[in-house]
Length: 221
Length: 321
Image 1 (cartoon, rainbow over the protein chains, first blue to last red):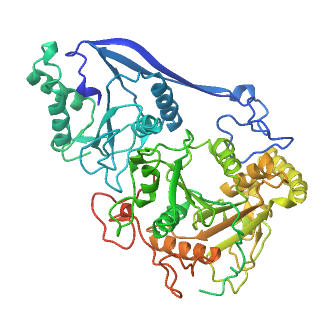
Image 2 (image 1 turned 45 degrees about the vertical axis):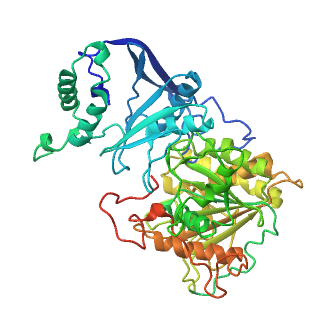
C-alpha cells in the first residue's frame, strides 16, 4: 500500500516509529510449573529448556521498526509484514497497543489486502460486506478484530483488496491498483497535487516495489 | 463400521462440558465443529469471542448454514443487550443451555511457540470461569504425522487385529491425580536424560499412558509430541484439577485418522461418531429422524470449498489457515 503515498510527491513528514522488541529469555519461567521440568519442542519464547546448558547465550531479541508519517493532518502508519521473518504475535501486539492509543474521535481508514477475498471489499464497524468463505488475516485482520472488541466504540472504514501471494509478498493486479488510485487521486487536491501526476507516480512506485502482477510481469517469473 | 465401543464413553450427566477442537491434520476437528454447530443451530447460541494474542489473526463474516438465509447462531446474541456482532473471530464460544454444553470454535492455529501460553492463559482460565467438569478434545492425525506413530511403536504395541477403526477414544480421570503425578516424574526424567544424550527426536517421543483408551482405538497411548499431551500436562498441573466440587473431572480425547485432502467426508463421519458418543442421535427436540440420525448441515463458507459441492476457481483452500 505504500505506493499510494509516493514520498517524492506527497509532503510526507516522518513523525515517529513504532518499535517492537521480542526478547527470548530462558530465565523467565512460565511459573506454577512446580518441580517439573519439561522439554517438548515448545521452548519459544518464554519457556525454559532444561537441556540447554549455556542458557545465557540463548537469550535473543528481535527488533522491528515501523515508520509513522504525517501528511498534513493525517497520520500514515504502515506495518510491513513478512511471514518469514516476523511472527504474527507482533501483528497482534502492535494492533492491541495501537488501538489503545487511538483517540476515539478520529477517522480511521484501514487499507489492506487479503488473498481470500474475491473482489474489493469496503467494510466498516457497521457494514460487513465479506461473504463466506472470505476472510482477512494478518495485521489488518488483527487490527479490525481489535477495533471490534470494544463494541462499536471505534468508527472505522476499511478497504480490503484481493491479492496473491503470502503475507509480506502480496501482489496486486492492475485493475485493483487502478481502483485504489481512483479512490485516492482526488484526496490530495487541497495540497495542490495534480491527480494525473499522482496516478503516474503511484504506478511507478508499484512497479518499483515489485507488487504488481498482470501484463507488466511478462511471460516468465 | 464395526461395533465400536462407544457405550457410555461420554456421560456428562448434564454437568458442564466443553468441546475443544484442536487445529490438526486436515482441520477435521474444525470442520466437525462447523457441522455440529450448524446442524444444531436452533439449540446453540453464540456467547462471546475469546480474545487471544496467541492465535493467528482472523476476521470473517458471520457464517450460517446453506438452508438458512442469515446467521442464526448469532441472532440471539445480537438481539440482546444491543450487541452488534458483525464479524466472526478466531475463537468463539457457543452454548447449549438445555444440555449445559459449550462448544469452542477455533478457526486459526496457535502462533508457533505460544501453545503453552495459549492453554495456560486462555483455555484454563476459561474452563475455570465456566466451571467445566468435562472437557472433550477433538484431534486428527494423518499418516505423515510424525508425532503419532511412535506412541504406538515405542512399546511395540500391536494394534488389535480386529480393529478396522479410524477413531481413538481416550479418557483421563483427573480425580486419580496422585497416580498420575507419580508416573509424571519418571517420564520427565527419562525425557531429560534422553536429550542430554543427544538422541534424536524419535527417542524423546515417549508414549504416555495418562489416557485409558478403548480396546479398539487405533491409538493406545499419547506421545509427548502431541498437542494433547501438552494440554493434559497443563490441565493436570493447574489448580483446576485439584479435587474439589467445582473442578474439572475428566478429559475425553477423541481422535480420528485421516488422509490429507478434502476432509469434509471425514468430518461428516467424525461428527456422526461424536453425536453417537454423546448419545444425541435420538434427540426429540432436534431435526433427527429416529434411525438415520442428524441430517448434517454444511455452513455457507464451505460452498465451493469443501466436499459436497463443485469447486470454484477462486478458492481452492478453505476457511481455515
